Length: 305
Image 1 (spheres, helix red, strand yellow):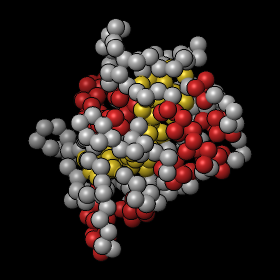
Image 2 (image 1 turned 135 degrees about the horizontal axis):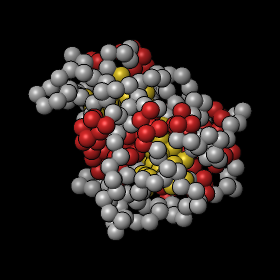
Image 3 (image 1 turned 120 degrees about the vertical axis):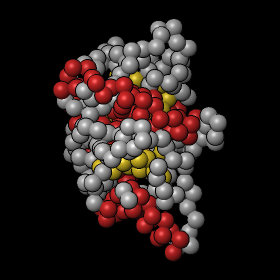
């Protein structure tokens, strides 16, 4: 029995003991992460004549995602694994997009705001954030903003060459700033970036403030076809991730197979209260009849694939 399955069964038993029926979103796809800190392949643009909605006016600077550099940094997989991982993330994104826009099912409140977190560092949340954003950006009529909300580590901003570019913290610090001017387009169609922003001493307080919820709402109000993916701080190391969880409609918690302690995972999930949460089993190597065993389960249902 996998770590995710054990965690889910324990949560289910606790919920029944309390007599509380907790609602859950649908289980969200399936994935394998065969390499530590690797990422999805970026497929060539489908067509320059796509009917996608054009996002709000963007700054003149365009961020080029250098594939060789990203692969060297562990953010893209070896070339021989790109196709398989791309297919797995197509499965992962589908229910998330459905929940975001209500395509064939009722849309979740704030469902276009997706937080990717983990209990501890090193479980693969930044990898998952990147992969998820890249895969969703392939959707027709969908624009994606990938936000580096892990402002202490800011690994995503540094790897993507954003450094101290103004971003999330700047928008939080000054309500008069137009946050759209901080969003930088990339050479991947329909994918933009919002950096962690310039360092400040009160970053924790800013991320925990009501302003964080306001900024999150503004991100989706500007574009009805926009999905925002937040790379969150680890749940057990900071309080910022708990504040961010209040602002989003979907939460993906990445669990590293055979590494994340079960007790730590349960403690991390308890910090999220009754928020809709799905679990992504990462770096599983058990074989299935097709390729690998991969798990993506719903923490409220007590089951996983």
